Image: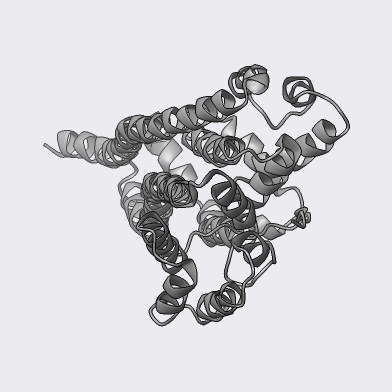
Length: 357
C-alpha cells in the first residue's frame, strides 16, 4: 500500500454529516456481511455530496472488477479522508473492518460534540462583550454629556466619581471606543475565518490553550481527538510511524497536527515515542506519560482510546466550568459598570436637590 505523507497544509477530517452518514452505513453493511461493492453502489445514490457520490461509485466499480479493499481505499480521492486506507487495511487484515469503521465514527462524533460545546461556550462572551461596549459607548457619547451640561449650568461641586465618569465621556475617548468595537469584531472574525490559513496557527493555538479556564476545553478536545485516532490505528496493527502520519492528517487541532507530523519524523529515525515527544513543545506531560506504554502493542492502542474517552469527558466538564465562571463574572462586571454610572450621575443631582430644599 502506498503511504501518504501529509503535507504542511491542513487537510480537514471528515467532519461533514454526509461523509459521517456514509461511513456509518458502510460499517453497518460490512458488519452484516453484505458485499462492500453493492453497499457502496447503493449508498452512492443517497449521499448529497457530489464528490463523495462520485468517489463511492468509482470504488464500487473497482471492487467489482476484482481489486481488494486495501487497493481500492489506498488511493487518495476527493471527498474521502486519505487515512481511511489505513483503517480499511487494518480492518481487512484482522477481519474487523465494520468494528473499526464504527469506532472511527464514534471518535468523529465525539470530536464534533466537543467542538460544538466549545463554540457554544465562546459565543456567550463573544456576542455580549461587543454589545455591552456598544451600549456603553452610546451612554458615554449621548447621555453623560447632557448631565454634564446640567451640572455646569447649576455650578454643582462634583464628587470624584462623577468627575471620572465625565472625563471618560470626552470626545476622544468616545471616538476611540467607536473605532475599537468594529475593530474587535473584525479581529474576531478574521481569527475564526482566516486563522487556520495564516502562518503560525499552531503556535497561536498553543498559546490560547495555555490560558487557564477558557483554553482548557480546546486542549482537552485536541487530546481526545489525537488519542482516539492514534489508538485506533495502533489497534489495527499500523506501524507507529505510519500511524502518526495518518493521525496528523486527521487532526483538526493545528498544534497537535504539527507536533504529530514532527513526532513521526523523529520516530522514523529510531527514537521512541516518549523520547521524541519530550523534545517537542506540542505535547503535554500527561500525554507523554502515555507513550511509555508503546511496547505493549495492542494494549497501547486500548490505553490511548480509553484516554481519548477520558479527555472527551474532561472537555465537556471544562466547558461547564467555564460557563459557570464566565456568566457570573460578565454579569458582575456589567452590574458594576451600570451601578458606577448611575451613582456617578445621580450623586450631584441629590446634592443639588438638598441645596435647593
